[in-house]
Image 1 (cartoon, one colour):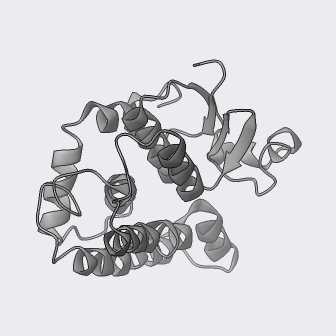
Image 2: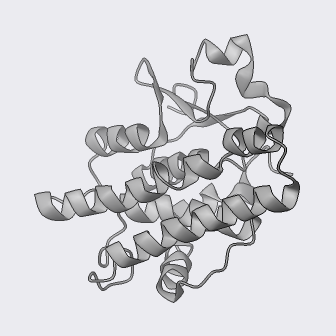
Length: 212
């Protein structure tokens, strides 16, 4: 199984981190194929043959190549239904998806390497680039924190890990990297609870084969 499943990623990639968590939660063994984003490895012709978008992650599994971390996580949830990352109740499932998308669609992409490189190309200095990233993360977490406020429990939506938790933990790594103000006490409590789980700990950037 390990040889059959290949995760193309990078140890510091938040999107790759999400997929590592999901794979670990589902008990799916995989091999790492690292692409150093800082050196532009993801832009090579060889990698674009795997993922035409030139982003990580890409997951080779079940005879297919899947891209986009949310799509990959939902595929894993459908093919390996236990433990479920999405609730059975349709309303709660929609709420979990909405919270996950706040991070995966509206926060992380606006402060990723590609966007920050474009800001530099437009003449913004490093202080301005860092402030852009931090403000983007602040706005995203303000919304995320509000969306889960009515749902008590150990994790974002109760006492079961969901797709929202899988998105949250990697984004907090980015928040610290860019010096965002960590003013969301409950998010930090949830993060600590998640990191008590082996699936999350093994997925941490510092625990990857290509970590530096």
